[in-house]
Amino acid sequence: MNNNKFDISNEETAIASPSGCCPFQGDTFPWSRERQSPLMPPPQYAQIREQEPISRVKLWDGNSVWILTKMEDFRELLTSPHFSASPLTPGFPFITPSREAQSKSYQTFITMDPPDHGYYRRTMTKEFMIKRMQELRPSVQQALDGLLNDMERKGAPADFIADVALPLPSLVISIMLGVPYEDHDKLQEWAGNRMDLSTSPEELTQSARNMSKYISGLLIEKERDPGDGSDLLSRMVIEWINPGKLSHDDAVQMGVLLYMAGHETTANQIGLGVLSLFQHPDQKAALMEDASLVKGAVEEMLRFHSITHMNANRVATEDVVIGGQLIRKGEGVLPLLHAANHDPSVFPEPEKFDIFRDQKDHAHVAFSYGIHQCLGQPLARLELQIVFETLFKRFPDLQLAVPFDELEFKSESFVYGLKTLPVTW
Image (cartoon, rainbow, N blue to C red):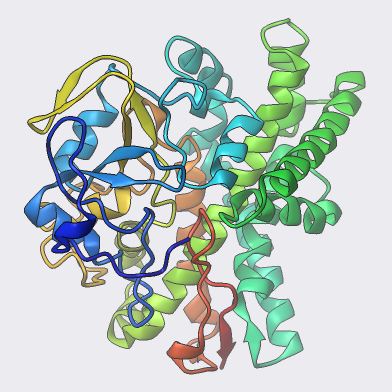
């Protein structure tokens, strides 16, 4: 990945787009966040949004794609029927070789277009309804309390990522799916490889095979005896596989997707949320005083960090105009949700972390937008809310154990976050 700054004033690197627009073609995309501001979006996003909100950039493979930086354009594109989410569609953009391998390593509803998308998504919709998520609340609270007890018992300093942020969502999704938690280390390793932008395509493909083989084995056991359907994989067998509505292989890929999406993203969001409150002790104090602020605080964390910031790749299936810009059939598009979530026309002072912000009924797009928005967002919100309802009551003096500039961020990962978060109390 190219870590150099992109200077949009450098005319020598500008390349006219095939549509004759937007000379923002500098260093290969994606661009890195600045070292001194690792929680901020790459500075080029704001520059481009101001000068040419829909612009073309160059990818690692030499292909040029459109990037969208405004919320209005982001939403318009993701509700248009003229764009495909399938990586098998000619012209689909991949931001690194590893993402190409990952995108082609399995097919689930998130990489399908209608009508297939709707059919397969419906197999999981009721599993993530808010009512069912609330039924999980006692289990999530119990898991969190146990992890915090263990962290306290071991004593300070501790790595909050390793001790709490990563194991909590892993434990919760294991309970929900019916996956033995004792296998979480190897599952996390495989999932981590698949999220790492620097992983070789060969290693990523092998990790994908390992995860599929593991979930397939679990499903075979549940197909023999699904029991009372107390976990999601068992219910999938009873309600979809046995009646012939879903094949075993399709169910395997669904299980892999749910495990990966169910812990990696939430774990990173927990860590970054805690860090942001460390940096804003007044907001941390307000949260400790007034539990009613938790929901708004979680929404601000989601907006501000936008950890799956390049997760809405599309390719045009027809010539279409978005935001006044003609995008031709076969051209790839990257609607940047991190840029949209920092659009000042929607969020005044967007670079300011503010848990008191008016979220306009959750106007952010941290979970994407349109028919492909994240199915598991009720679970993510539940886990985040429980963490921030509990953490600072248990550890009111929790704080960073190292200077901020010593923290390491996962810049090479598809899901942005912290490698470690040393804390003391």
